[in-house]
Image (cartoon, rainbow, N blue to C red; front, side, top):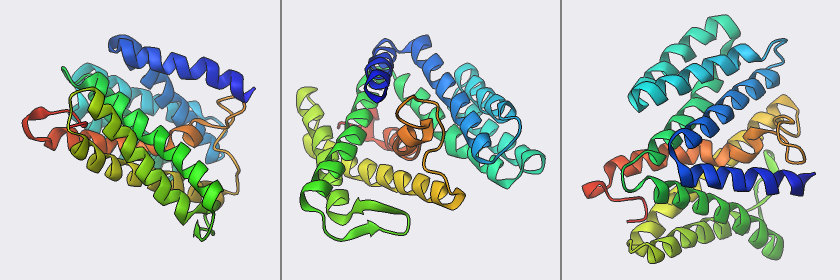
Length: 250
C-alpha cells in the first residue's frame, strides 16, 4: 500500500509541478483542504470540514488576488477561528496556510518558478533521505530524544549537507551558482528539519503516531509535508530578497 501510494502520488505531484498553472493550483488547494481536515481531526472535532473550508478560502484568495491577499486571509481567518473553534484549531490556519501560499507564489514566478519549486523539492527530499541514511549508518547521539527518539545528530548533519548538495547539483545543471545554491540549501534544510521536529512534538503532545490516514501506507499529509510547510515560506522570502530576482539556485 505504501509503495502504491508513492507510485501514484509522486508522479502526479511532479506532473502538476511541471505543468504549473491551474494543475498546480488545484494540487495545492486539495492539499490545503486536506491539511485543514487533518488538523481539525487532531483537535478531535466532530466536524472537520469547517476548518478545511477556512483553508480553502485562504487558497482561493491567494489564487485570485495574490499572496498578500492570502496572507491577510490567514491573519483574519486565524483570529476569527480562535473564538469559534479554539486556539489549537486557529493555529492550524497559519501553519498550513502560509506554506500553501508560498508554494503557489513560488511556482508562478515568471522564469524561475519551475526550477525554484524543483530546487525546494530536491533539497527537502535530499534532506530526508540523507538524514535517514547517515543516521542509520553512523548513529550516535540522539538529536531530540524526548520529541523524536529515532533522530540523531549525525543524521541531522548528514541531511543538512546532502540536501544542500542536491541544491548545488541542480544549480550546476541550470547554469546557476552552486555556492549560492548550497548556502540557500543549508538554510532550507535546517528549517525543514525544524518543521519535522515541530510536527513530531505536536503529535507527541497529542499522543498520536500519525497526523491522519489521508495517504494509505504513509499516514497523514502533515507527516509528508511537514518540512515543506516550514521551508516553503523561507524559500519565498529568500526568492523575494535575491538580488536581481534570481532563482533560489543562484
